[in-house]
Image (cartoon, one colour):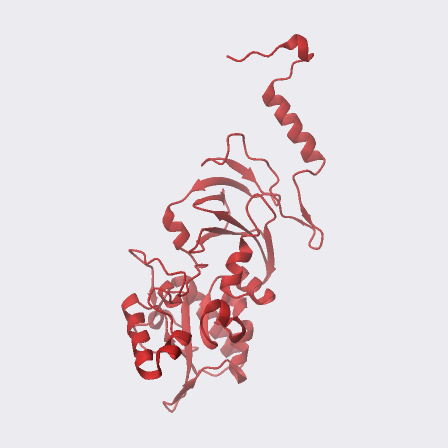
Length: 322
């Protein structure tokens, strides 16, 4: 056992007590808080984790008062959730099981759907119903038709091959994702067209009365995924009919800052758990968001929160705080 020489050190203070005294003094001096001057909020870790490194079970409290515990999640956590980045370079990891619902069975009367075999994740369907109900309530016509939702890998291959045959390789590569590279695999995407009462249809461009949808979709957790000025990042040409569900706070930030999902995935990495957190105030709700690299994440001990992988290298925790 290691001994301490009291004669040379004067008054003896046990190491653990000394450690706690230092922490108390530093906290009193504001050493563990970073305050957002504009918003007046504390967005940094306020409690130093217990000694021993980052180990599962380790606890900490955010400056906004959220008690959290470091939790080791399975590798599949990186590839599950509403914030998955999927493109021709970052392919979708197909799970053994995927929760999907028929849009036809769960839709409201505010819009059409192609047939009974168009599927979507439950949370995305709920947000879709709310958005298109409000579109109708503010004067929109019942002409929006959901023509695409979830797609299997085999069906995406069929679409790509069909586009090559009809329009050429270059056109297919610009407007049709390769199998595994399509967001439709996630069950978080819908494509719109226009369907009229007389049985005719038209391409959805997000203009005229439909501009309301493209302008307000972020209020319901949706974003227009592919825009012309982001093609160099997304690899897909302008598609005003392609909507991606990411959740309300994330859609709000993406819309405010003009970020596509490729950019937003990198942006979230600026908010690690042990640094400044992303504070979002939208729709009368407040959220605190942080990023954790790998599969170990600090999760709130209670309250309403979601966890999503980014399909690249880490996990995003979104906690409702007000």
